[in-house]
View 1 (spheres, rainbow, N blue to C red):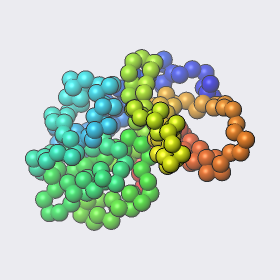
View 2: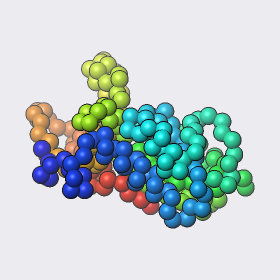
View 3: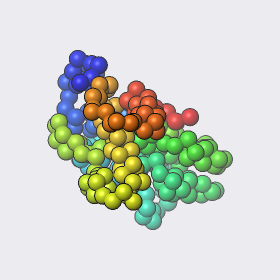
View 4: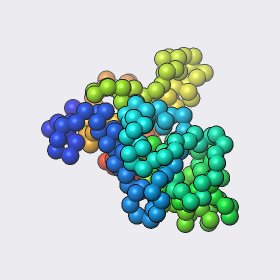
Length: 235
């Protein structure tokens, strides 16, 4: 259930796959055409997860139509293209931020300008790491949270790509940390589905005898960032 009458997007009913496709193409790729962008063609850089997110919703022809001439893996060695702009669609991880800063720092960055879109909310400390890059900041055309971190497998279905969830959630007590981490990842990704659909769900569940206070805190932290904002500028 949700607080809206239907799962419509912008007043017209659209399937989850359509919504995901339009968000990736319009909110992300097309938005990089506006603003401080002088390059006609751009490079799209993704990690292992985001390339799967993209491939589940968009075809290569769709991406090319939005002005992307080259798709690259952030962890592979790449040819410098200093006259072209780059669009980064990446997870907000420490490793990805290090790679991004390495690409865009120094006197000769790999690309002219970077438009960065994170698949889920980024931690404040990672934002501060980016802000510390005095040479990098002027080269950033956009820094946004897309809140789109799921695989749209058909018109109404999605998966969160947690293949080891059963093992991590119901394994030994020694793996309690893995279970909590797995739950947090799944919760964030499910929340991004509701964000894409512009739905604010009512969640009802059987309460445990004693609810861990940290669970309540985590829930309240998750909802404002992932559900109330479909995508937002990082500041």
